[in-house]
Image 1 (cartoon, rainbow, N blue to C red):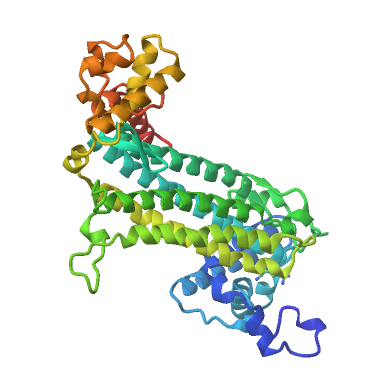
Image 2 (image 1 turned 45 degrees about the horizontal axis):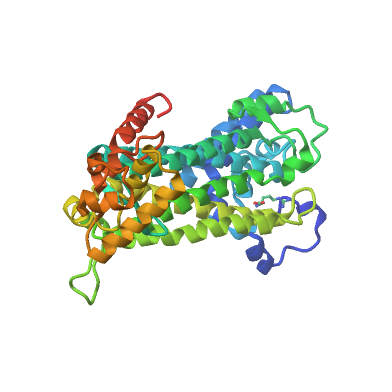
Length: 461
Ligand code: ARG
């Protein structure tokens, strides 16, 4: 097959080289965006008089047909045509002859592939942002159900203080909200059109870059053709944002795996989202959560892969950049599949309130509550801490909880303690008292929950 650069060469490309350099096996998925970019490009070319409007119409129509064929899986993919750009252009020339040969006027595959990728990433961001919303909705629904359930909260995986279970669910909403905001911020930098940078230096032809950008819905055009030809920052940024999401999902998955264990027994996962064992009949395994946790590895690795790919590249385009897609596509597909599964698991899981309540008074979850009671009675914080520490040790000796200590025993360590101390002891009392802004009491969480419901129902929801 004649090469696009055939004019200068005396020998055909070695077949092994063709197999080695091809990217069609992974960039075929850019077809939609490639056609979108080409249609805008040729429309602009006709407006500035580089092709006639009849030629532009012919090309646009043919591009649509070619895309239909690709969608229907009817395009033969051949390594000697290297990549999706050449495949589409080749199909166009087959159909239109010399008219098809005009499409690539004032353009290079370098600005073309950058444009395709930006269009792809812009759409990908919109998808992920929507999927994140679904995950948030699922957590918010749970939060309504579980508001009054008090669970232990942990630091170092040691029992710390009691909070509303809904506080946990809204914690994940906050994390995923930052992820959404990060993506929307990244989108602003993606939304700048590379087309017209041509190979690396721009062109002597009278193109109208702003018009192409407008046709493609870009907010702006890039300002330096050398930078444009080499820039893949937006891919690193996008992939980092995905890695952050994957990390959040992984932490959540780990937490639920622990909560689902017999040792914890806090949570039952829906049958449809657990699997059995081929040898141990009693088993129910949280494989989906484990894989959400496990798949985060490749997303995090993708960020590294892109950095290593980019570091040390001189300006402008280098063929190394072809490899960028592998990392980005895999990270995107991975996060998308995790986010798509998460809401059903979040909604379908059942807390086990009886099981949680059975042991909620273990671990002195109300110790901090008692310390703050003493502070309110005028005891300096460090002294109060010391006093409660001694009381906890006393409880451990007696094998009882703080709320079981008789008033005399409490007053023996500090005479400022009164009968009203029993209103702050016990996990429920302790949880109810956590009323500072952002705190874990059901009352505060209910307020934040109302804000979440409003936000998710709102225009940007
Ligand atoms: N397949 C190439 C890529 O993905 C397209 C750009 C090729 N440019 C070039 N000068 N060989 O990067």
